[in-house]
Image 1 (cartoon, rainbow, N blue to C red):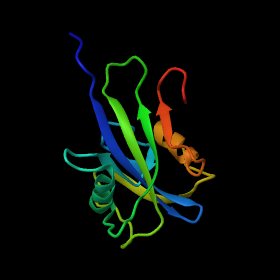
Image 2: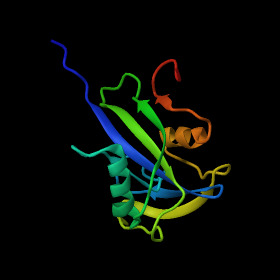
Image 3: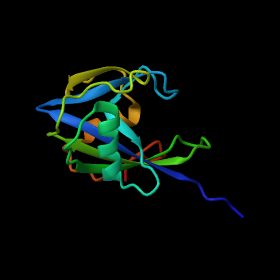
Length: 151
């Protein structure tokens, strides 16, 4: 009997201010350290919606409340033939919130920076770079890491 693979869900929040996005510089996480990434993101916990997860992550990582996330798209991703769990990522944006974004997990986040969407820092986590470049395109479903690419 073939065992089923596991799909791991995560939610990402891109805070937008005009033509800028707030990014964090990852450190000490064991995954893409030294790369820029969404200012708030994390796994969706059991019994939690993707919307609830993104609000929780914004509070835990940035101290922000009052976020009404706008759903942008879902990304299904893998790493080719590697034996990893597959991922389903839910990407949200927000243009309004309560509080000033600040680093609440300094062990995992080296810096926060507002970056122009047309002049992103290097490097950005690859699948998040694809997501950032897809904002405003009307895409609702993206894939990353699969042979043949997008649908």
